[in-house]
Image (cartoon, rainbow, N blue to C red; front, side):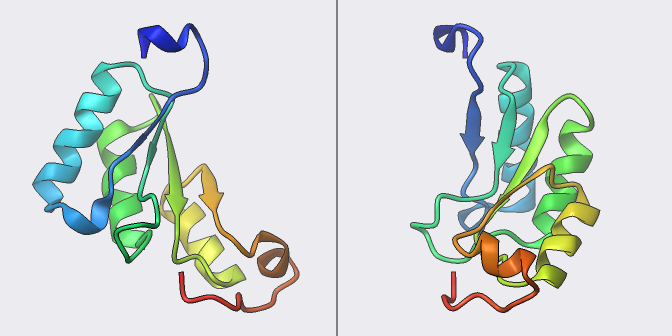
Amino acid sequence: VEAAQGKTVKVIIETVLLTDEEKVKACQLAQAANATFVKTSTGFAGGGATVEDVKLMKETVGDTMEVKASGGVRNLDDFKAMVDAGATRIGASAGVQIMQGLEADSDY
C-alpha cells in the first residue's frame, strides 16, 4: 500500500474460495496495510458477491475501509441488498440495466 503513494488500493479477497475465518483474516490484513477497499472477487473464480460475505467484510472492517461487492449483482434488488449489507461500491457488468430496473443478461 505504501508503494501506491496515496492512490486508492483495493484488496481482492476472492471470497468464493475462502472460509469465513479466512475472509475475516484477509480483511484484517488489508485493514492493517491501510488499503482503501476490500473487494469480494475478481470474477475469475466463479461465484461472486453474496450478501453474507459483504456483511461479514463490513463487520470486520467497520468504517475504516470501503467494501466493494463485485459479481452476482444482476438486478436492482441485488444492488439494494448489497448496499444494505454494507457495500459502498458495486462492481457489475450491467450497471445501466440494473439502474433502469432491468435484469442483467449474464450469469455473473
